[in-house]
Length: 269
Image 1: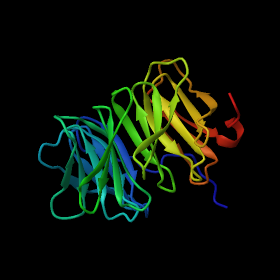
Image 2 (image 1 turned 90 degrees about the horizontal axis):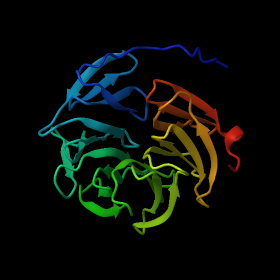
Image 3 (image 1 turned 90 degrees about the vertical axis):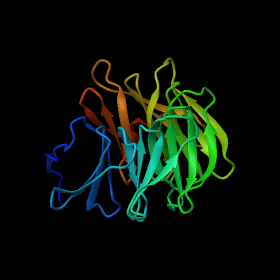
Image 4 (image 1 turned 120 degrees about the vertical axis):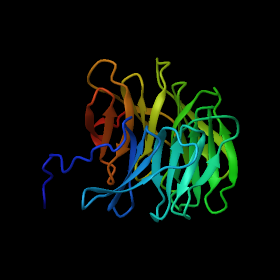
């Protein structure tokens, strides 16, 4: 079996001047999209390691998030201008604009079947959109009306998790558009910045601005583990499970990425 070298395979310099906020691989892994704070989405050929396209649109501000649909034909971007954009469905992007004025979209995620797009909004709401018709299906308003930073669908598409700046993550029924449970970080008023489901959908990971990551039992809402990250004031900006669900990666704003053995830490805390 080939062993990972733990070395950097390539460096893709930011074509913009403001910094990269997010990245997403296409399902086949051959294309990488990066959302840039300069208001652009950059498309990279991964095998060739070169930039193939720069996408901008009317009213573009900072691009906060990007996500590919499961079939890879559509790219969604969440923009600081209050809209999500769908790319690849015509010569120009299709805008999905949230109600209200200038409500920055911090997160975007496709459902596993690609039929629904979820967006997280600074106004404290998540929105579900019909990708085919571009119509808004429903609005999921967080109990605190605090900004929502991220969204993630469970692998079966039945649950949507939202990351909230009030220090909680929320689990929603996609079919009933109703709140299932609230997962509140203990002893912290700092926001939840990222959420991710394990491959089997039984675990939810949350990354928080207090410098910790947490593992939760989705069925019961119980906190299974607290993962204290190294360094002072090291806000966790992103969490992600490995495909087999055995490793959790946490990315910190202090420049550290940590890998955790899920089987070793998933015990009641």
